[in-house]
Length: 165
Image 1 (cartoon, rainbow, N blue to C red):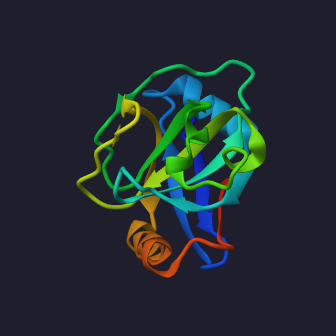
Image 2 (image 1 turned 90 degrees about the vertical axis):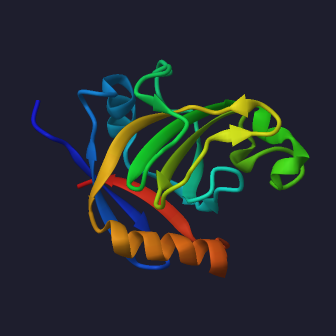
């Protein structure tokens, strides 16, 4: 199989990075994401993980990929896939009353890590390993600056989208 690439975009900020799917390291997760593209919705900035932005979408894989190529210490440029089954309904996460975005119990978090010193641990559930399914190969510096602006300038109205390159 030849290398597959996707774009990761912060739509309102007009910044895009290119990422290579890690088909050898995370074949099930990379295939699930690829088959579901395009994906995107409201962007959120990580509260616990540190240098992370993500979007939450309803489950899209016919069969969840399960753990593969997992990490709890993602590095800059890592794209990670997380499955959350009801845990985001806790009011401590700050989502609107009535549940997490989209009002779906099973949510997929598709995340971009843009800086160093990330640690995927949550006070309610403990370690939260993510499947690393891609890595940014072009545009990380500009994308990281835009991600930091999401943190400092706000996420409201911003969309994080993933598309085939």
